[in-house]
Amino acid sequence: MSAVTPASEWHMEGSADSPVQYGAFFHDGGYIVLPKQMFPRSSPTAPETIEMEVHTTSLDGILLWQGVKHGENGRGKDFVALGLQNGHVLFSYQLGSGEANILSEDPINDGEWHRITAVREGKRGYIQVDGEEIVRGESKGDKVMVNTKGSVYLGGAPDIQLFTGGKFTSGITGCIRRVVLVNKRPDQHHVQPVDLRVHAEGGVNARECSS
Image (cartoon, rainbow, N blue to C red; front, side, top):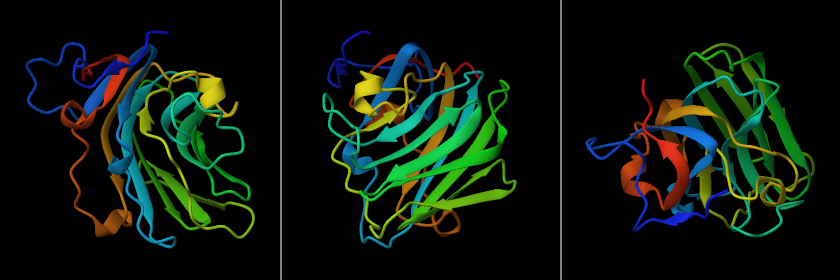
């Protein structure tokens, strides 16, 4: 896989004419890196919301990952992740005393656009796809704060098996757009999606979504 291109040199393939970029198509192990501060954390009990729209036929892979710093082994370390498992959305997190793994009822890898909302408040979390049924879960133990040191990765990550401690082995092929990362519940915020052109620190094999 290509090395990460630094932010000063990196630009999304084919995006030169677009003033803002809310989505990206990931291919051939591609990913985009967002700075850690894009996903701020306030108090241990403050809600965290991840929202995005996804268009893919991939069976498995990373949609979003935040965990250890680049180059470190993520096994057993704190993380927050959205991914695909057998086509279903997997919302998972590790707070230091055991993982939560919350799986959507239905698969989303049908090549259509799907809207994902994932919310964590301390140990408890839930996911909702396309405004349908909410699926809830919680992590083990008594810890409620996630302690992640690394950047936020979309669509994939470098050295995925090491980086995710074996949880994922690939990214996705497909589009992710309208990503929101916020310290509020979904009904409490009016945050604009992340402008990937402005905020990306780097990436490989990511270009503008065609749709």
